[in-house]
Length: 233
Image (cartoon, rainbow, N blue to C red; front, side, top):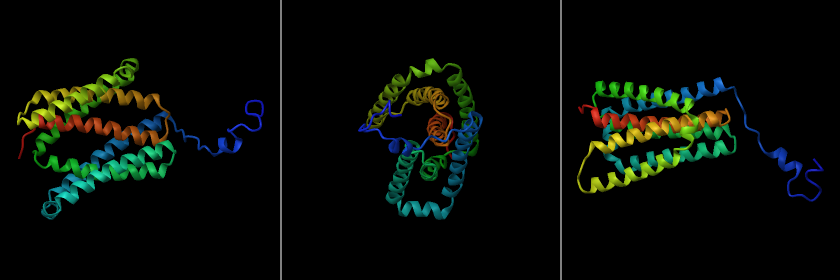
């Protein structure tokens, strides 16, 4: 140690030992945890969807629409920030708190949209989304080099679609072609995020982080499929 860092070096043994090492788990446990967190996020959304259909909840939202919107947005982004901080500091408590906050507030946000569709449409869209997840998840594992190269294309395409949709909405034009484009983009993101999750260290905080990223990819595909083929009640 003294040969590498002579006396007076800014890097001291005290600083080195103060850095918390990542808590590595087995790859099998890591993947099981990652998949379980995705399923749990959907389960939370299902519970939230049940609650948002009650008369008392609908009355509460109607009376406090702005507070509800602000609260869910703050909770969602606050949860993401907490998960990111927990991941960088290897703090399991912060990561889990951020995950719980994100899942709950985002679940209430998306569940309001689900209330407009029939149960049959939701079930069909969910089954189709599950199939897409399996296909592109396996593709992310089988073709890591391909997905490692397409992040820039995916981000640029998504930003372009967002701009197009904003312009179309201002013009009062609704086009299903943009829904199809978003589905294709997020199919790419599923493969990309699966690739990233497998390339990174198998830690609990990484499983939480990538579980949420994949959940967001999947929910975007799911909601767009509902908009395209869902039957409104």
